[in-house]
Amino acid sequence: MNDSRVLVTGGAGFIGSTLANRLATDNDVIAIDDLSLGTPENLDPEVEFHSRSVLDTDWPADVDAVFHLAALSSRAMLEDRPREGTRVNVEGMVNVIERTREHADRIVVAGTSSMYDDELPSTEREPVEAATCYEASMLARDRYMEYYNNFYEDLHVASARFSSVYQGYGGNEAHKGEYANTVSQWAEKMANGQRPVLWGDGTQTRDYVHVSDVARALEAIADAGLEGAYNVGTGRNFSFNETIALLNDALGTDIEPEYEPVQLKNYNYQQRFDVSKLQDATGWEPTVPFEEGVELVCRPYAE
Image 1: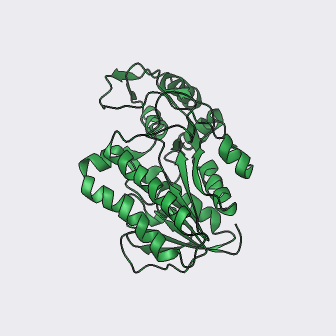
Image 2: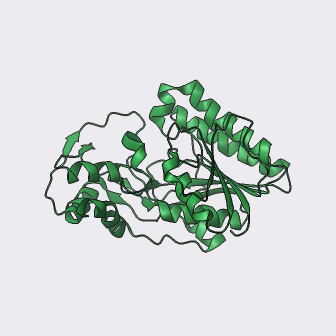
Image 3: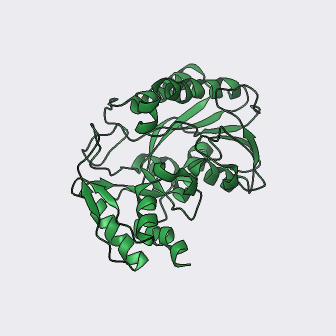
């Protein structure tokens, strides 16, 4: 993407700021964020930042493309605040599209992979259902995506379903704290001599994708003017036990995890994405193998 005026909602957050900083090299980028999960310290000076909610109506809307990443992005947030979360996740998306669709022809929305079951690999073609309030709100976003694609011929709306996105506390993920990826949380604990806590027996798996690859995928989806849902992952998965072993190797530690019973109903035990739909449509490929990504997460502790 070059020489475009771009809006990134949730632009001071983890994924949003990574994308905004990437795009700002060749584009005029506007980031809005209500700072509930983000911090403007994540943003490069070239990004124009506005402290606004996606429910507001006083932020710049005359843009060529939109990356709508703002959301209450975990089940815990929605179960604690279902009304507020639903307003932000659903009404906020409609507000963003309605305010920008007369200018922008490409809108990429953050979806969710939480509604996938444990049958692997997960594909965009399989039926999904909502088992939590968070999943219900994010599936509603997909339904509105379908509406806008069907109703407006010149508007292209796509949903990016992320797998387990990470970077580490040495990057833009640091501010997320308890909402950061488990890899980042465990690395922080282990670097400080603490034992990480794993649910169950540690054999559950995740498809870990580095945030830099996610930013590239989002840009590729917009560049191609895609419509519909697209998985963004790596096609590989690692168990929690394997992840701890990789962290021990990278940190030079020998720390055993603690195991606790799984504390959530409708818990996702297995995750691995089929990303061929995105690859076929754009040529995008993940470039950071998880083994290398763990080294990147742990490098700041060595330094």
